[in-house]
Image (tube, rainbow, N blue to C red; front, side, top):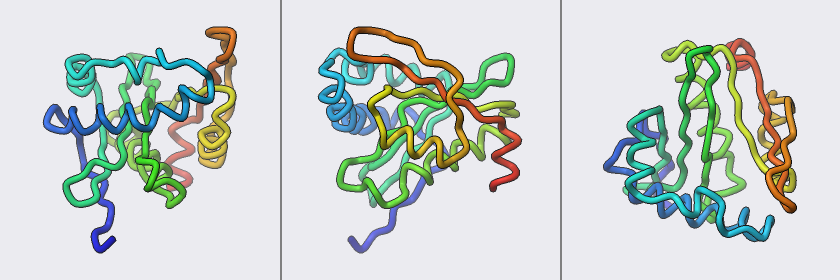
Amino acid sequence: MGTSVIISAVADERDAEQILKLQYLCYQSEAELYDDYTLEPLTQSLADLTAELGRGYALVARLGEEVVGSVRAVVDEDGTARIEKLVVHPRMRRHGLGGRLLGAVEAHLATSLDAKRFRLFTGHRSETNLRLYRSRGYATVSRKPVGPQLTLITLEKDAESYAASA
């Protein structure tokens, strides 16, 4: 491709439109998997996404000027970092970019925002996501049916485990 993928230090409202388009593209496969095209990432408005970026921490991965990956997170008052909407452009998958984004957001959350634990969730049929998260030390802490086709699996790991593996 001639240009390498760079993970930017922070995403902001200037990136919102590209992130929204990427999110919509990436969640098509999840919607198909669960036969549910009303998943929140597919219905989120640009205004809502922009507000979300202002409330938490977000990273983008760029190939030149194009946003090809993104992840968002927020740390609550008890030190739990909720990592959300980790997306990688379909043509960029299977090259380690999702793992790089996850590692980068964990590093920032653990060192700059004093996160005590990392928490994320995915659907029970999302084997690729589950494989990535488990390979990074996440363990299932709960399963919650949210409809006839979807059970959300919540996974966590201690932030100390990041420091040990970094």
